[in-house]
Length: 168
Length: 242
Ligand SMILES: Nc1ncnc2c1ncn2[C@@H]1O[C@H](COP(=O)(O)OP(=O)(O)OP(=O)(O)O)[C@@H](O)[C@H]1O
Ligand SMILES: [Mg+2]
Image 1: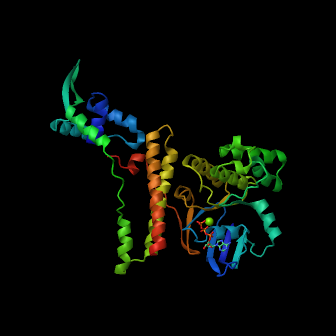
Image 2: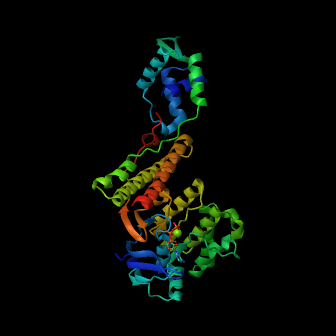
Image 3: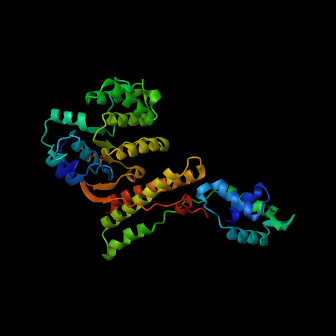
């Protein structure tokens, strides 16, 4: 969460609760109720590392609130994060290991493993269908995230089919 | 309750080439009224061959096909044609639209052939074209349409006679996600109205809408099961942002 908070603070200084609201507004249901405790803990660590600094702002009739702002060092780290290419998901798959290894031990047959896995993926897809139909199109960030998950799942199913053709 | 579709040890061996090709090898399939069944499987596993036989578009080599409790594999071609007109909608993998008719007429014709009045046929044409975002293509010729548009016309045409049984071969194969969404919505409505659907698809989003998924491999059914649904609440529970 460190870099996400730095990114929000790059826009304008804010206190912890404002950051929570900002996360909710930006991500919609894709980021359900960020934990306020976790936000304060993260801000504390960022401050210790010199990436943000806090000032106390006086408020009438209420205790002071801490407003955080980005330091030069924080901005530099954020820029590196934004600029560097992001790793794609690695094709590392627990199921694939089972598929290759289990038959060697005589424990399972591949067709049965593939069939069970396909059913599992399809039920996940059905959940995502449900979720997408209940997500208002105006919640664009959440919609895109769900569509991304669906495309990944489709790729997993296509790969499963390849495994079936080659290994079963 | 009588099954809408029932096959017994259904076999298709293509004999037109130098070597016989066994495309479907002993399929026992039963589909209940109102059920939505998706058929999946690798390329060449016999999906198209199977649905073609169910629609009487390809003759079986051996085995039986029963539709609504009546033996169908022994019907003449003209009897099959009549059955399709009245009861079956068919979406071909490669569209098969009538080239010298407009998009609108392609959709309207099956309803007229099934005996709908001109007014009813016209209404269905209009509502189907609207549901599939094709209204402004109604006067075009099929050849002037993109692959995805032709595919949606093929679906509209298959639904025009409100068939009790919809047989569809990859009806979303050429669609982008927005058009797939329209098609999914329409299929959802068709399913809700109680029409029976048997659909070949590679698209897991479409398959996941079905009640049941049948997997073919090398011409045989290797899996046949209902999809379990669990209901997740928000995107964040499925996808990890942190
Ligand atoms: N008219 C034909 N003559 C000879 N062989 C055929 C004919 N039609 C299909 N086949 C063969 O029968 C097998 C099954 O073909 P089919 O078209 O049913 O597969 P499919 O599962 O629909 O594949 P795809 O996902 O690529 O559409 C394949 O080996 C194919 O080459
Ligand atoms: Mg096919």
